[in-house]
Image 1 (cartoon, rainbow, N blue to C red):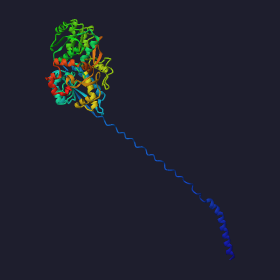
Image 2 (cartoon, rainbow, N blue to C red; image 1 turned 30 degrees about the vertical axis):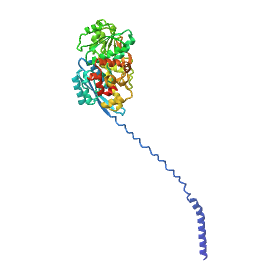
Image 3 (spheres, rainbow, N blue to C red; image 1 turned 90 degrees about the vertical axis):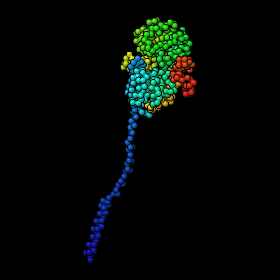
Image 4 (cartoon, one colour; image 1 turned 45 degrees about the vertical axis):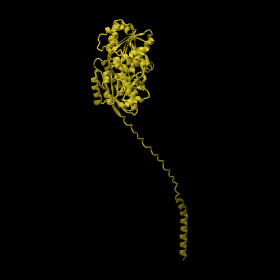
Length: 474
């Protein structure tokens, strides 16, 4: 019993000892509480902006406008046709090189010229009109003047084709689509009378002569009106046969009346040349007044620089300082640049019309931009709606009902050109409507005397015209 008890005691002591030793050890081996794990907040997810989708602009609409040129390119009147077509070519090259005419809606309009040589013959002009409109599908047709311009007018009216002329005397209410966007012959001759009054106050006696054809007769009436309005005494006024080749008798008859000035505006270039030569040979010392003076360097050579000094006409050279910069805000090519390029390409061919057809197309361009269209009637409508239109010499207005029965002539200022040191130089820019407002009665009276009012040309009396076309008398 004692032994068992001793054993229990020993076991108890041992257990205590083990516990005593183990507890500190156990305490030292006890795991420390785990460090606090700081979980970082989730990183902010930055969503990249969507890639910008660049939508390319729609490709510009590109169309081609076919432009008809129905004028004499050969024959005796080619000097008023072919140089004009050369000018059109320069204009078209510049338009196409710039990518076309840009309309207000972004359309680009390229141009294509389609010429037709009508040889200044009415039947050929009508044939050309049919080809250009029906086969070539042109959107405008440029003409010179005379019977070759009037012959196709009923056809153009039927097909609503826009056409142009250099002589608004061909206009009438029966030809609503014939327009004169640049030249307004013969009205542009009246500033010459104004200039003569200023520079030659002593000049009072006027002689007038021009060929007897449709164009000459109309110019004849206007020269009479201009001289009467200026208070000149008309001492000679006759038409000569358009087949005339010898001008010596005509000039002799003129000089027998002792004129201070000789008007032959509207005479064809060859006639002007021959008249100047005869005036030189017969010793005329007065003022020479022409409409055109084409190739005047040849005239100077056949007469003399002194004789031609002071000669007046109305079609400027485009290197004239008064023309550059152009007054047109949307000018396709500056006048001096046009002059230089024309002279480089077609030397020795500059004439009154070298720039006119091209400037008609610059007016047409204004209508295309405004209307966003090349359709003939859209352009015509735009022309009448545009607040301000420009021709070669500045702002202009649609006018003409008073004498031509239609407000389809774009009228503004026009120059007087004077020979100065063997060069033509602008000496006056004069508003033609201002002249008519003051002296229009002289024009109407002279036109009626010579049966050149629009209704007379149509074979109507004034009373008949008022009944048929009352709108032309409002």
